[in-house]
Each structure stands twice: as structure tokens, then as C-alpha cells.
Image (cartoon, rainbow, N blue to C red; front, side, top):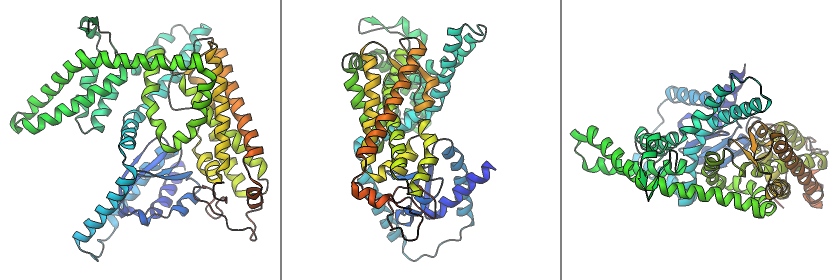
Length: 503
């Protein structure tokens, strides 16, 4: 039954993106179906946003359809199958233009998209995401197991099982550098296994016998940052070898030279340098929260939703991972998770204020459960962002929650997460800190409550102008209701949520 639902969603999306012939590549991340399209003009944006399963669309280097976690992983294979069927069944199109004309049109479209979306900084962030996002499911799974194990140890339950759980939870983190190296080489166009092989040097126990810069190295020194640098270096060395090594010797010489040169530079340079940078990141994060905790939390919690909208949050992924490697948890994620709490409070206030707008209230009712669990995209794309001003008041709620947790960090009660990915209520199993677990949970729960309340109050009293209330607080299912359709609302197909332009 679930398969039929996912296939139906895929079947509904396909014609709205121009059909199988218009789709040139398919991928997905945790929440979005990412498509490369031959002709962007064939996409029906408004019809896509009106599909019940679609939370919104984002145009970047790829065309991204927001479906939510879990759903996107199930819809993507069905979509891929439908595209394959459509390509095999479709007759050859009539040649109405020459091949040169088609090539010129395609080149123009590609150049326009590249000029718009491929700034060096955005390309850098996209590569960072492509390296680290595939690791998040393992981080979540191992983090939850680590949390369960910690609880069992504290309660002194199942002492025969806890060592096994510790091994299961820690195995991935002990070798995460290898996976980062593998993904980095793949992303930068090298041989993935060579990137992993060079990164594996960082976690090899034998490096403890090596001295660099006047001090002994330690296994894991440099962590994911060292692994990333080592794999990038290996990729460039490999490409250099491919240009100069004869084909007959390539299979022997290229991998040997790549691993040898990159390995030596990693051992006698990158491990030390990356270790210093990693230590600096941990020191800076702790200093920031120890000395300016409430203010730092206010800024981080308040700006995280805009960072997500701009894609800049991807730059934080290696920082989270480095903190988890160093301290066992990242102190930044619980603060950033407060942005979702402000979003939930905002949505509840919108629900209360717009008592007569059936479609927006329906969207909120369907999206709130996901919002409580930390999946904010349905509420962002379906409610606050299209309305404009409530998006700002949601950020105010996030800032208040972040300041709350930051204040406790400033007085010595740190709250952290053993993995990245979840937020909201879903973060509770991953919580850790420098105090007893009960106090850590209470502080995080208090932050969520503050975010909910401030997001609600700010939106209820300041989220709408008088004009917005007049336009929006009407029964939009009535035939007499004015047409006020706004891009981005994922309401029902026959009655999309209506909202004015951002005020």
C-alpha cells in the first residue's frame, strides 16, 4: 500500500517537471528530490507546489522538490523507475531544429543556470554537503545507540550488553575519517578508494610512533578536517599522475605515487595542521558559549532559519562533526534546533489568528507533527515564508530559545548532541553534556518551551498587519473569496493556501 502511494506521488510529479525526456539526472538528500532538467521552462511550479506530498520547491544548481525525510527516500526509486520506463517507451521526437541549434540552446540554458547558482562559495558549500550529508544516517543511528548505552550504564542495567553497544556506537566514529576521505575523493573527481586509503592513515594506531613538528602524532589527530585535506590532495596527485604516467604503467604507478606522496604530506604536515585547526574550533566554540553564551545563542538561534534558506548552514556540518570527534557531542546543534521551536510557535499563532482560512489551517495541522519532531520545511515553505512577516517572528522565537540554552552554557551547564541531523523532540535521544543527563534534558526542553512561547507571542501580536488580516482571515473555500495564490504553499491540489506577498 505504501509503495502504491509513493509511486502515485512519483507519477504525479513526473509530468509536472516536463516528463521523462526532460529529466537528465536524479538524486536525493535527506528531504529533497534533486533533478537536473534539460528545459526548465517545461516545469509547472504552481501545480507541483499544490501536490499534497510536496512541501515546496527550491531552485539551485538542481531543481529541488521538498518531500520530507523518509518520503523522499521512498519516492526517488519509484521516480527513477518511471523515468526509465518513459524513456524506453517514448518515440523518437521529430527533428524540428538542427543539432547545432539544440546544442546552442542547451549551452545557453546551462550557462544561465551556472551563472546564477554556481558562485565559488555556493559550489564550495555544495561540495561540503555532498561529502558529509551521506554520513548523517550513520551518525544518527550510532548517536542514538550511544545515548541508549549511556542511559543503561547510568542505571546499571544490562552490564553484559553495554560493552557491545559501546562498540557498535563507536565503531563508525572511530573510522569516520575513512568515509570522509572516500566521499571527498569521489566529489572532487578522484578514485574514492584512494581517498579513503590516504585518510585511513589518520586513524591508524601506528602513527603514534611518528614524530612531526617536534611532537608525537596521535591516532585521529586532525580528524575529519585532516581526512578532507588528505583526500583532496590525493585527488590532485592522482590527476597529475594520469597526465604524465604512460597507460601501460598507470595501474601500478598512479595509485602507488598517489598514496605515497599524499600519505607523507598527511603524516608530516596535514595531521598536525588540521589538528591545530580542529583544536581551535573546539576552543572557540567553548569560549563563545562560556563567555557570551546568551548573546551567542540569541544570534545563532535567530539566524539559523535564514541560513537554511540560503543553504549556508551546510558550512556548519564539518564543525559539528569536529566537535563530536573532540568532545563526544556538538554544543551548537541544540542551540540551532531552537529555530525549529520558534517556527512551531509561529505556526500555532498563525493557526489561531487565521481562524477562517481553511487551507492555511489545514496545512498547519498536517505539518505541525513533523515540526515538533524537528522537520521544519513543511512549515517554512507552506506557512511562514510565503506569509513573510511570520518568518521573521519565527526567527525571534528561535533567538529566544537559543539565548536560553546559551545562558545555561555560560554558567557551566553545557547541552550537546552526539550526532547531527535531528532536532526538535527527535533530538532528545541524542542529548549529552557535562552535567547529569536529567539536567541536560531539562535545559533543552526548557529551550524548546521558550522557543514555542516566544515564537507564538511574537507572531500573534506582530506577525500580521491589519491589511494582511483583512486579506487572509477569510473563508478561502468560498467562491466569493478573492484569488490570492502565493508560490511555495503546499496545500491541497484544488485549493492552494492563499497569502499576500511578503510584508
